[in-house]
Length: 357
Image (cartoon, rainbow, N blue to C red; front, side, top):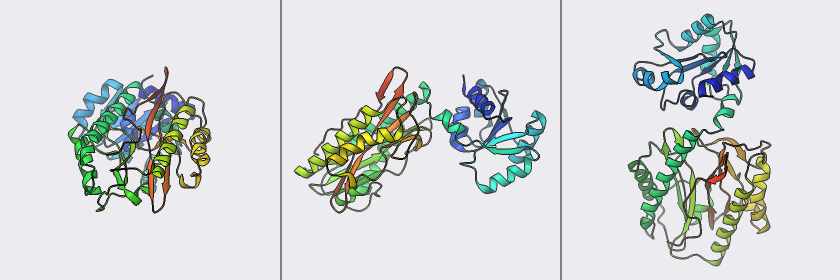
């Protein structure tokens, strides 16, 4: 099935007549058009209507019509157009993005489409999005290769005296120069004692010999994100640093081994967490093992202590255990792993054995 057919089937499964989409990533998923602004409506019988203004309409005509959508300029305004569609298509119930739409927008659309009823889509669209098509995987991989090459390019710059925020900016620039259309999130580039903060912000700190440097970053291609983390030692690594690093690496390998179709998120998380706990560092691993990646940097399903959800073929999920000892240092290693129809595949090719710069 193409995207339009998948959305129509989801609408029927939920017993609704139609679907209203306004959120950026869902618009991209529904139409394949990166950066589209506007509104998409899909009916249970598979009619797709894309409303966008003159800034996008010519490009949308070329990109979206082949997928089966009509492309229309919403001269009346989006809520008024939504009402007209409900009347013309006799839609009595309309799914809406309850996890994304603002209260103000909900009230505008609710008033406009009455007597049609807006009902929550819940995780309906995300359930479709979390099962990646091959073209989506290819975009994630393309973004990851850009990130890996950019990291290689800046490694010679990571030396005593270099400044965290300047290196973070250089990494972002290199990714852009190599073809990334944006950064997946604010690049994390922290060193020394700051590496004990999982989401620390790069600042004016200068790198010193004996520091761990943790770099968490990602590129974007065609709207899709990559996500990786590597930790390096600068100059030398103490025995304790080596022990912690190797513990994190073994935990990650255990998590990857446990990851697979039908495996429950909490069980995958526990496979990695047990390695860290058995090594005596359990209290220093506070976050979840991983999250899925796609049009958003954080998608479902997750590998977390609370997750009751089973993974399935088509998921791309990070495996990123860490140990963070306050006031001393931290280590995190992160790869993205894809569950394909022909088996499990690590999309991250960058080496992860301890490297001393």
